[in-house]
Image (tube, rainbow over all chains, first blue to last red; front, side, top):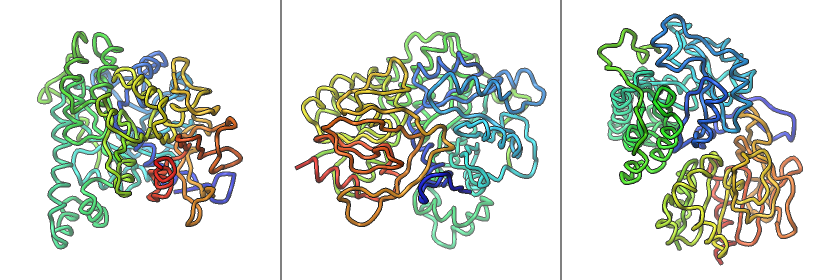
Length: 301
Length: 191
């Protein structure tokens, strides 16, 4: 889990605090999906706190079908060279060899993501075995706590990636945060029942009961397409947002990216959200959830 | 006495929790109006490029610069230190720091997140033993001017400095669960 780097004896990398610490630094920010170095620069110019380097945004993965895998290392390196902000990249669920490759490339965060085609239908990556921190998706509190038990340093609600439809993100956030509120008023005996029902370690349930929040930061992903979408999920309790297809599948990505950044900071101020929402052009077209052939959020166990 | 934590982006909540624990009334600052009533400011860690853009769009850049010229006590951590420094290397060309701290700072000097670390620091004049410090994609202070007092070093570089009413660290005292550095800031600059 942690390894000693050269330097003074007390110098330790890869600790839980160091892994979760980077997520703390991303709070109140927007992490943007990018597929080229040019897009990465647009994202950084617009105020992104980090970029997610991938070959196709989720909307295109959905359209193209086929197996979606980790991106070409050359492409990830190109994006790392283009920006000064942290770079994240995705591996398939359970594909620890892809995660090892991403770590060796020096990415700042690995997203074990349902947007790619799962590699293992029973196991997620043992994330404690890595120095690089991991973010994982969750649709409910049990899933979030199982990922944290496996070593995830950051949780994002999954939503339904590539749809431009916020309804699933709202459902997942409300489910996670609603259950946290219920656990806070549960008595000791009920916490054991919660652990059983959630299929999660009881010590993590205890921590949630005591803190009233996850032991790691909770961000939101999957379906954010407008500044008001960002303000909505931030008010519901997300601490930062991931925007995938919503920026670079819109008519005019740069001003929209900047507007979502401002709305994420000033999420409680409707006058600012209104001001930045003016004249942004067409958002991505978006999809009804009922019409989808594949629901990405159902991947993960 | 009221402290403000710049809350445009980053670890502002953790600083607020530490200040609360020290019994200091604290508000989050996102607008010029919120800045007006504070007696000390914390600029947290986060992404300095993002905060730089939001300083402009929120209309806070000039009011903060003005308060800093009037010697508002300020504590900048990590990205906050970068925003205070007068010479930033490896930043973006359009990054405009406040330039009140006489220091040359290199962004992300240790490398990617894989090199982020914890280390024990001996802080000059701090009672109670060493301070466990958390460095996240931290900058390195390469040089400081004569007016700058170095309070702690790691690997030969200053990591906690003071210049008059300005405190700045390359690490994140708000993540350590140890209140001593915030306490020192308050006791030394608020008198």
